[in-house]
Image 1 (tube, helix red, strand yellow):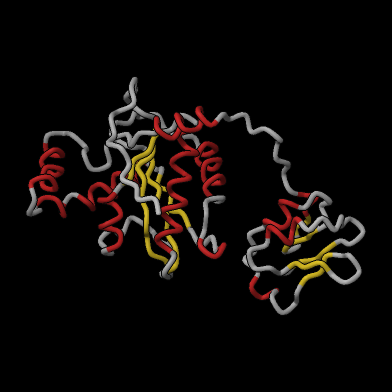
Image 2: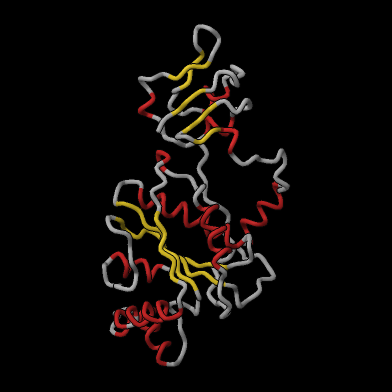
Length: 261
């Protein structure tokens, strides 16, 4: 797969020249955009060239610019509304028993596929647990590790279970793990994608919370009920479900600590 320029559509506007982070495009001697074949192996397949081309003149990996979804001139989000949306997103610890429809999860996962990815690799692979039996199997696998835990907080999860309270999975009907091949950027890509996922879910009224317990035990190889793809490591985990609580205020946060240089 590679890059093709449809010269009959090319406007020679040099938008692709500006957008390409690998400087693969250049203005040729006849006033036409050319591809530097020596730099072509550096292509990140990010698609920026196809997304900025006003003449729809670029075909990347067999996908022509003309086939891409159009972006509206105005996304309909004011800066203030977007800032409030980001601030209002909470890590929810109480979920209703209502199942999250598959189409809602798929829509959010599609949005998460657009999360920033180092070198444009997009290596993230998802594991989604929705079946109640699989969720219960996961919980039962986790409990023994908390029964004899040294610290009080961890041990309290087992004690809560004996009292009939699930403080480990918090009754979340869905568990999502982001996995990637073990390389230097795998964790960053998974955290980035999981963050996008949590926001995409929130936009649809679905809450989430980072699940450090699941992630830690999965990375230890202690959970057989979590089928991490072969050759991958789990780097992020979320509990997902409809919230069983309603936030009425923005909680206080200390001012950000920033050093401007």
